[in-house]
Image (cartoon, rainbow over all chains, first blue to last red; front, side, top):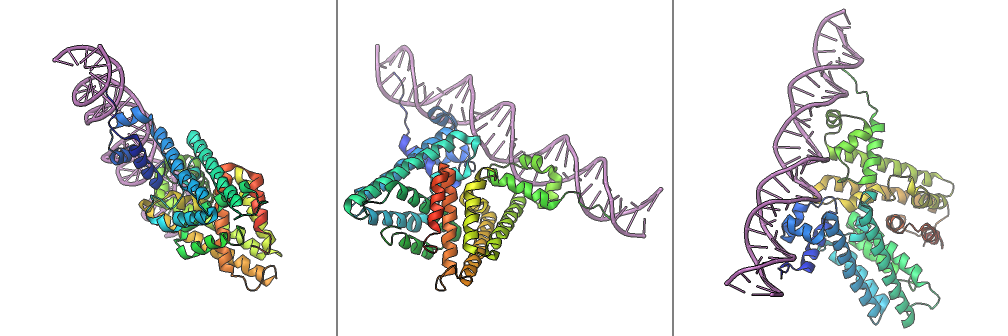
Length: 193
Length: 193
DNA sequence: TTTTATATTGAACGACCGTTCAATTTCAAC
DNA sequence: GTTGAAATTGAACGGTCGTTCAATATAAAA
């Protein structure tokens, strides 16, 4: 009946995500994207609708990948230890190989205004979803006996979100890896705060 | 001999700062700025050189104003109490009257890349200066007996920077004022962590 | 093999970008 | 009051922006 799309949507969204993540929404032009994902304007607009549409899908892809990583912590034998390793990897190790030192969602929330209300809402929503996944990790830690039964997993989830946002911004600002490592170590002392 | 400039440079830089702070560097156009500061392109370029030049001056103005506020904490009878009030004011109270919930310098560090190396460097430098002023506050707190003589004021300064960056981003993300207030309260318990 | 719905192409659109500069206005100095 | 250097104006520049669409290519169905 008809022709089927020849590009790999996931691969294209990944490439778009990497560019948007690096440069941010406004500094990324459609022509930058055309080069990186190797598609012509007509195809891009037929598939994604607009610059905003592609960005939204990139955000969702970013959140999906993040959630896989965090869920892996919940599944680990020692959820808290796995979580600490994840923070070290995110903030210290991969900070110069990832497209940006920052969390793409936090970066988006920081950059966008009500001029892009839909995208701003989406980034906020996805960060809320991620916070729930962090809460799962702390619930597992309680089940493992790594945390007291009396701690509030949801409160710890918001706390870890604040710490990650702060540490990544601080790491990007100062490049002071040693201090960031110390701050992460301190985070995980005294049975988590 | 010659004509003197008729505009008030400080007022103009303040207005430019507010617009840049709200919209970010890339989303702010020179025409937006022309409207807000009520100057024509020729005058702006004669006075500030470029969009980057005006942004740099706006950053410096922002840092200057911030430092005044933080220094006031160091001068207070109770530096720690004053600092806590300052955080509450920055993150909770004025978050919907200021141009943005975010710190303008952190927002800039998050947004810009090496494509605007000079501005990125400047924002990082100013944040480092601000960290030193926070250290002054903790030194004063030690002198007042509010903090143990053995604490590292510089380490606390980096710690407070991380917390502020994290809390402002979290507040912008969730709008959850109550949780943010609790997190600030917890920050200032146990003789500052 | 022909048909046909859809995927793809790339030139082109109007709008807006940051910036320049010749013309004009302004006012301190004489 | 005249002079002249500096401040100001605003039209205009070349370039890039996000987006559109008629033309073309493609592959599944008949």
